[in-house]
Amino acid sequence: MIDLTEIEAARKRIDGAAIRTPLVRLHVGDAPAEIYLKLENLQPVNSFKIRGATNAIALASPRERAKGLVTASAGNMAQGVAWAARAIGVPATIVVPEQAPEAKLAAIERLGGQVRKLPYDAWWNILVTGHVDGIDGLFVHPVSDPAVIAGNGTIGLEILEDLPDLDAVVIPYGGGGLTTGIASAVKALRPQARVITAEPATGCALSAAFEAGRPVDAGYQPSFVDGAGSGRVLDVMWPLVSQLVDDAVAVPLDDVAAAIRLIAERVRVIAEGAGALAVAAALSGRAGHGRSRASSRAATSTPARSPRSCKGGPEQVGWRLLADSQLLPNPNCPPLHDYAPDGLISGTNSSAWEGEFDVPRRPPCPRKLARNVAARKRPDRARQRRFRRAILAPRAGRGRRACDQPGRTDRRRRGGLLHDVAG
Image (cartoon, rainbow, N blue to C red; front, side):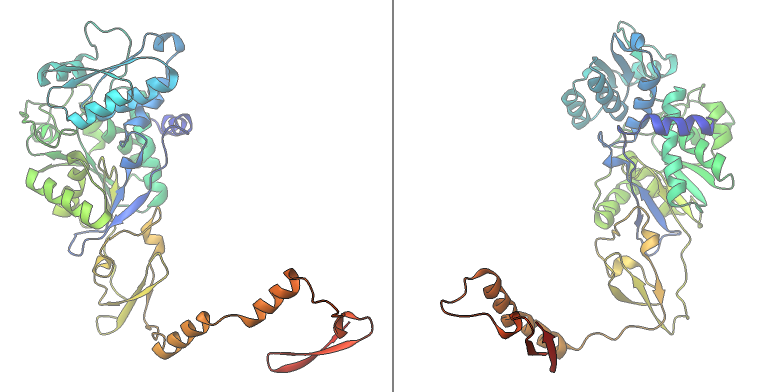
């Protein structure tokens, strides 16, 4: 478990490189809990990995960084390291598995990183040994480096600031660095909160390790969920995750694909496979029925709150206040997305925008609305007169008005009343 002081120090260290991402709600009517998304896809490299990479590289000495940076990654950590390397002016070499997506490889090269492909087993062996043969430079371990884990833990701090009463946090599990970081912060500040991991069913190493009581070979099949899942839990990470994680969920690929579509429809966010893992686990009910938080790569943390009932019972009409201050009828408190198809409420914590009212507001009279619109279309004669007096030159031979002469009084009509104006 990473000490909370190290995570807080990492937060100050990465300030300016990583941004504080918002927390938005995913509105699903039949969900077992209220689900919130931590949108880490808004980071400069579209992933939370910039947090850990920046913190680890900032802690290294200039002499260690002089020969360049090296890491092994399926694509996201690679972009974080390449971003940091470009910022300090050193080269970056990235070792990726052969099935790494071309979009991520293109992003690495765009950031100036050099890509080296290896078979998956050889690539995974680098994570086990923490060394790349034949490449000089500072190796930034994407999983087990304590500085990387502390940087990832800053997500947990932000989660609890935005949703301090969460009941569970659901995190996609790949190597364990994200899980250990977030869990360290959550357990330190809210010990009663549960930590649940989500893995693809084609590579559920942590689920198999919990069943066996130790790391075992679980088998791994490559899929579109390339940023999570593995064939075996790293031995160096098992003592950490076994103490911090309360449950591990294996998610079928069909559920992950459905979660990707749901996130796109409701939140207008395009999530990668690993980004939808935790959302799929939360929607399945395996994460619990309280205030749970799913954590993912496109939604790198998704908390969920238990649904609240409508005030006054089903026989009354409730109202819910949206972010744009519009009141919408809400009989029996149905899901908010029934009235807001986008399903997105702006703000870092959408629950802050919600309110319920027992008495509905009478809609405005259509005749009054039409009359007001017609009045706005009429020319403002008074404004035109003021414009002429202030801008246009006075007519020749026209003297001062009576009200402009000292000691004189002008009687003007304002609002239907006569007012004496002293000159």
